[in-house]
Length: 243
Image: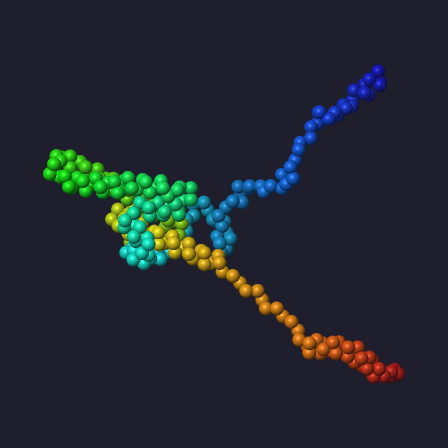
């Protein structure tokens, strides 16, 4: 009886009861994402910034709204193919969107609307006046909608580079000066990218190699060899004075 109770107190562990998990090398050394540490900090004082903080938009544009001639390539592209320039601008700000999607959208809405307006004006004598008014109102509304959509992209660009509204609100700029705004935005991104590349390519020269001349080595060796003899002479010159 005693032997049975003593044997029941212990459980024999078997291999299948405690399986061993396979751990790949480096699996336990993975970085841990701590949400409390992912906060915005000031670059100067390293203080934690609130989530609603927005840096002031007080930077000036590097080029003016009418400075299209400063970059002839973007000027030609914006004049003859504004949809291509618009697609490139969108792709430069948002990497996840290919330039073909906004290019096609711009070509259908803006260039298509301009072609429809030209056809309506050309055949105005053959179209009912009321139909012409409806078409013009639709084109006018579509133009303002495209200006607002393009203005939202300009606003995102201003937040990225802390730019101020110049010469007026971002939506009004695209509604009134759409082609000039496209060229200005392209020049702005191009200038900022060139500045970033210039700062990244800055190199520092290593310090010059310092070497001692042979004469200096001889002087150093002679001074080191003469120092023990001088010390001995100083010790030999000492005299014993009775107290």
